[in-house]
Length: 129
Image 1 (cartoon, rainbow, N blue to C red):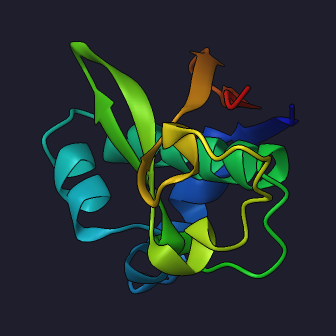
Image 2 (image 1 turned 180 degrees about the vertical axis):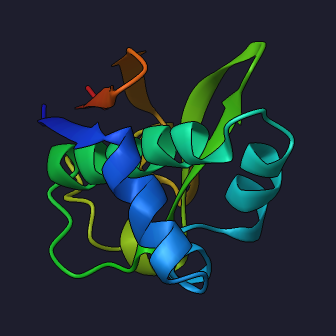
């Protein structure tokens, strides 16, 4: 079982996005950017997804991955979950016998996020047995 954690100052990401507008396209999927755009402070929600991606990559022991290979879906009224592209999914160490969490697509990584107005923290847990 893998565990990952990441902490980020929200203002730091917001400043980086303001300096480099195309950075959001490199770090976040279309769905992640669309979700954040509906919120009062998009940078805060993108920071949450950034932390979650890092935490999940650590928990799943991904070695080579792109930021867009790990997508955080949900939020708001539904709990967040993770969707992996085939590229990222192939790197997840499989444990025999394979369980449904080993399939590509939605992955059973559990996310817990906490924040205040300055920082976001995310814990990723590889929920495969």
